[in-house]
Length: 254
Image (cartoon, rainbow, N blue to C red; front, side, top):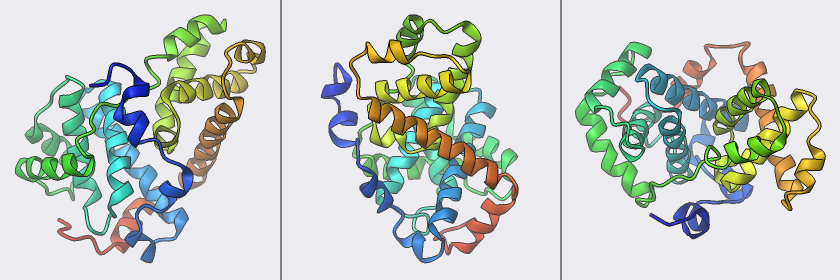
C-alpha cells in the first residue's frame, strides 16, 4: 500500500479524464442510448448501497465497492459481464479490503431477498472474485474523501447540522464519476462547496485561503447537481432499470 495518495495506484493509474470514461461500456451502446446507460449505471450504485445497508457494512466498504464496480466497467460491458453478479462480488471483495468481512453466502442470500430474480450462488461470487481482481489489476486500495473531510469541516466554521448534510452529499458523490476523475480532497471540497451553497452558508473566503483549484471544485459540485436532477427525473419511472436490463442480451443471465 502506498504511504499516501500521491504515490498510490489510485492517483497514478486510476484518475481519468471524461473522454476515457465516456468510452466505457462500448458494447452496451448498441442496445442502450447514453441516457439509458447512465440510468442503469446509477441504478447499480443504488443496488450496491442497498445491499451494503442490508448487510450492515460500513459506508466506506460500500463506497469502495462502488468504485470497484465503476473501474471494472471501464474495461467491460454489461452484455459480457452480468452487472448484478459483479455488483455483489465487488461488495464482497471490498468487505475484505476494508476489514469488515462478510460471507459470500450471506451476500448471495441477502441479494436474493432484495432481488428475487437473482439466482447466483456463493460459488458464483467466489469464482467471479478472481476475475474482478484481474480486471482491477489488483489495485484495491481506494482513497476516499472521508479522510480529509473532518479536517476541512473543522476549519470551515459550519455547524453540526450542516456537517451532517455534507457527509450525505459525499456519500451521494459515488453515484457520479467524480471518484474516477478527481483526487479525494477535491471531491471533499466540492461536496462542502455544494452543501454550503444549498444551506446558504458563505464559505468563499475560507475556500480562497486553501490554495486549491476552484475550477475543479466547481466541476465536482456541478456533477452532483446534474446527478440530483437526473435522478429526480428518473424517479418518475421506477421500473425503468428492469426494462433496460431486459433489453441487454447479457451472457449467463440467471
